[in-house]
Length: 452
Image (cartoon, rainbow, N blue to C red; front, side):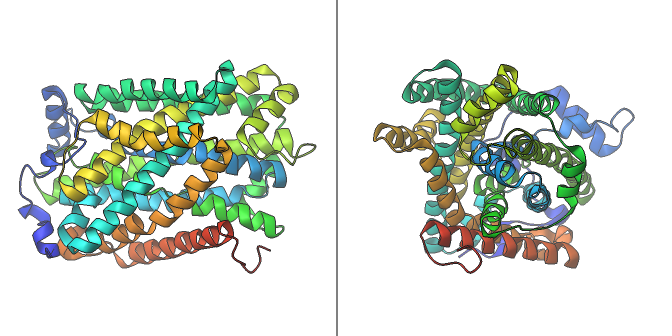
C-alpha cells in the first residue's frame, strides 16, 4: 500500500510534469499556455483573463442537467407546485461544495481522484472501488443515452433504437474533438449547456408562472406529505453524481501547470469562481424545470410524472413552441451528458488501473448496456429509475474519497480543508449518503419511517 506521502508531494515540491501524464488531457496552444502563464505570473495583460480557466466546471455541470433530473423535477413541480424549490437550492449548494473540492484536488496535487485511490488504497479495496465506479459509469450512460433517444423519438417519431444509434454517432463525433485539444470539446459542451438554458428561458417566458409563489417556495422549507418527502429525497440524493466528482478532478490537472503554491492558490481561486457560476446555471435550469412543471401541470395535471407524458401534455397546454423547446433541451442534455459520461469513464479506468484504451472501445463499453436494455423491451422510464439506484450505490466511493483526501495535509499541504470546510463536507456527505440509503430502501421495497 502506498502512503499518502508517496501518492503526491504537496506544496512547492510538487514534481513538474505530473499533470501531463494523466488521462483525458487535451492539448493547449502555445499562445494559450503563454497567456495562462502571464496570468499566473501577474504580468501586464495577464490579469482578468478568467475565460482562460473556464471549462472544467462547465463540463462537469452537465451532470446536474442530465435526463435523470428531468423526470424528478417535473414530478416535483406537477404534484407540489413551487413547494419543493428550496430542495433544489439545497442540493445545488451541496453540489457546489463537492465540485469545488474535486477541482482543488486536481489543481493542488496534479492527480485526479481515481489516481489517488490507486496510490493510497490497498489492492483489493482499489479494485472493488474501480468495479463499482465502472458499473456507475455504465448506469450513467444508460440514463443519458435514453434521454437523448427519447428526445429524438418524440421529436421525429423514429423508433427508440434508431434514436439511440443516432445519439451514439453524434456523441462519438463530438468526442473526437478531444484530439484537437481541450478547447473545441469544452466549447461544444458549453454550447449545449447554453442551449439547455435558452430552452428553459423560452419555457418560462411562455408558462404562466406565479413568481411570488416561486420565490416563497425557494426560501420556505416544508414537506407537505410523505410523497413529497420521497421526491425531495430523490432530488437531493441523486444530485451529486459519481462521475462528475471523478471527472472534475481530472479536468483541472492540466490547466495552468502551476510551479508554486502561489500559482495553485490563484488557480483554485479561478476554479472556485467557475464552479459557482457553472453550478449556479445548472441550479437555475433545475429550478426552471420545477417552475415550468408547476406552472403548466400543477393546477389540472398533477399526475404528470414521466418525460414523454410531460411532452404530450405540455404541447396542448402551452403550444408547440413550449413542447419543441422541451424536446430540444432533452436532446442537448442527453448528447452532452453522454459525452461527459464517456470522458469520466475513461478517467475512472485509466486512473484506477493505469490502462489506456482507445476512445471507441470506451464508448462501446459504456453504451452497450443501454442498447441491451432497449432491445429486451425494458420500459425506458423504468430503466432511468433503476440507473439512479445504481448511481446511489456507487456514490460513497468518490464522495467519501474526496472528504478524506482533501483533509490530509500529507496530500494537500497548505491547501488541506480548514475546520469549517471539513465540517461542511462531512455534513454534506452525511446528508446525501443518508438520503441515498433512503432512496435505496424505498427502491427495494423496505419500510422507511415517514415514507409509507
